[in-house]
Image 1 (cartoon, one colour):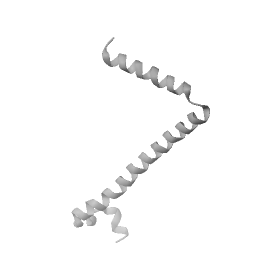
Image 2: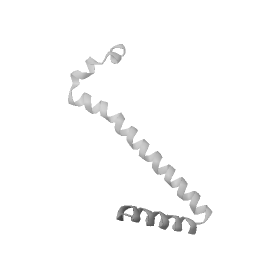
Image 3: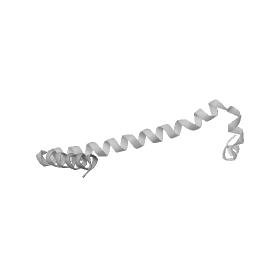
Image 4: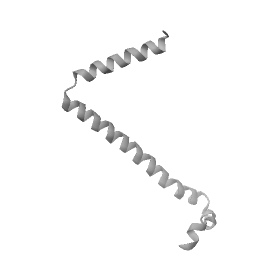
Length: 74
């Protein structure tokens, strides 16, 4: 057994031991916390993706005239 797999196994045992000591209420809270953290990460990705088109137009204003979708609005 290599050191890497040995530490992974011991980490898994340690996390399982901690999980067993948590009350049902704390386990639910931990699960909800993980869901909120994932939702926050996704919101961060979407907010960055929404800013990128504006940055592209700021760096090259002529680029907006090359978009066929925007010709209907302009």
